[in-house]
Image 1 (cartoon, rainbow, N blue to C red):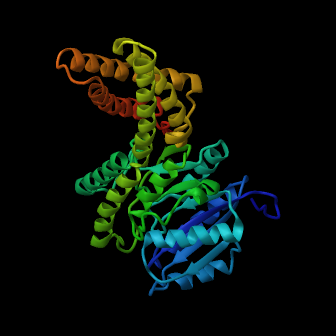
Image 2: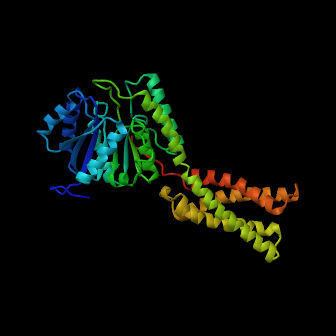
Length: 379
């Protein structure tokens, strides 16, 4: 991380703009006041303007004459996500900041909240979200319909994207650890519009973000109109599907490990019954146990490697064993039912039992043993 002349790390506030001439001056002056109050970081402000046809750029240039830490880049209007991606890249290339802060230009975000963000980041939080939907927050100017739409959109992202622990996945007010941000694949979703916000949340959590939500008051836009379009809403729905498929990576890895477990199970069973003279009733439990151990090692160090949390290795092993014990018991009882009651061949019965156990295993381990770290909420 590059150091400034005062030896302080840098935090960069990235603010996309398009036709914000009526709002940008007030917003920037408020951010400057916050800058003077922050002692731990040098605060840079980067305006990313998409060639606004109004006086946005003129106003920003005028303010830049008085403040060295306000900067601006311009480009063709493509969408909010594209603007943020360009802003992130420019900030990292120019100043190598330790923190990137996302913020709107329209007055709906109170810059004073940045003074809460930075201490939390210093204490190890890699993603701090200004949340509209936790205790202590408010959206006083939301109509019932807008609040319903916002909550429903968040519901889709939370459960389709596997980030159910976060209450506000579409907030545009965040503080992000820059090193973590650089690990994210921002090109995967090709989200150019507002759905970039939800894509980024999912990508940050996928990469192990230590996150916390801070309650905010979401103010009314003071001037101008919302930039949200029908195209953005359609892109959001399409992106939800992409998020769902991307989130399936864990299950695909789980299935690969499961195949390995099946091989261990079958080989052990065949060895014991065909070469060691064991009965099926005795060979099956040992085969199941060995497959449990091999699966835990693979899941812990590969399948769920990004979900590592404060739960100890031994604790995870015990949880995994409990889940495996339950599913293994079901597997064994089902196996006995099939060979002794339905008189199916033992290998076919073993295969069917493994199928039932796989479903139980994944559900239990994903939701308990390797559960994603719970997101803190600061009240």
